[in-house]
Image (cartoon, rainbow, N blue to C red):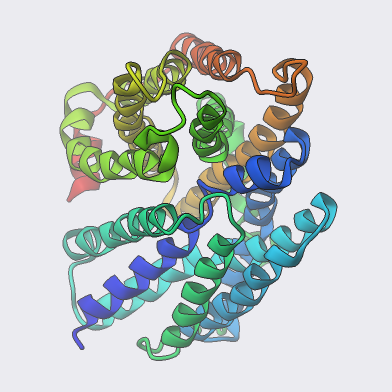
Length: 417
């Protein structure tokens, strides 16, 4: 089999695993278990906790002792075991610890998948800038397919979604051992502990501009998890209202939510134009405004006459997600010295997927329980979404006022080529 096809399978399964439960675990939690929002926030924070240290640890192991593809396979097999244990968990506290272990195995595989792809493509003489994006897009397709499989199978509120993810993880874990060998390359290089852990990138905080950027990356990273955590169960709750119960959006919310991922694949193609025309700051500001619209439209919409607003919100998600992540990565690339560039990208991910995801998940769960649960025990979804929109608006205004960066088209051109 050609290398391109082998890597497509890897990327497809990598994100199929995540898509099998990430957007539907909220429906399982609130519709099936009826555990609290605070406890659910803790569950979603496990991704942030694991992202703080596991990618760095996995990187050290792959650099020094174990082939990247073997470590990748081991992590996925261990993750399959943890996913298979989740349906048997009876308490939210135990669920937290099992999910934390699951995320400790899964989160580093995202970076390891990139390592395997880049290493094997370089060995084959392939052009990574040209050839990798068409391969990576199959990861998003895998995520979408997983959402549709779980939704059409009726597993959105069922623990069976975790078995789907577990089977895919086991299959990918075994498949990983057939991938091209990626032996450790860093064993002969002596590095300090600070360099090994990527902590030398923290010196970027000496720059006021970079410090502000990473702070806003953390604040926006908190928003990234909110629709992942609550979007699906928001639509499921309309089933308690007779007028909406039999509508397609209520029966198959994951399919509606998958529009967000479809939009994501399309907005990726527009990024070069927007970056060249408007610059990084304006593109990132567009992302922040898009988050305001994303949440606001959810607050105004419903599965009947307001379905168009929910669909529009999902389309806007592509801009909200892609414009921040891609332009943010570009900003880090152009502002960091070559010797800390890789570590700086790791720091960017740590602030968004680590600290941001952790704080957003934990605080949102606490706030929802305290302010947005009605006396009947029903969630005040309109209030929840408007609160999230207000938060995003405040972040956008502060970013526009305090963040200073001059647009340099040449930097964008150099990055693209």
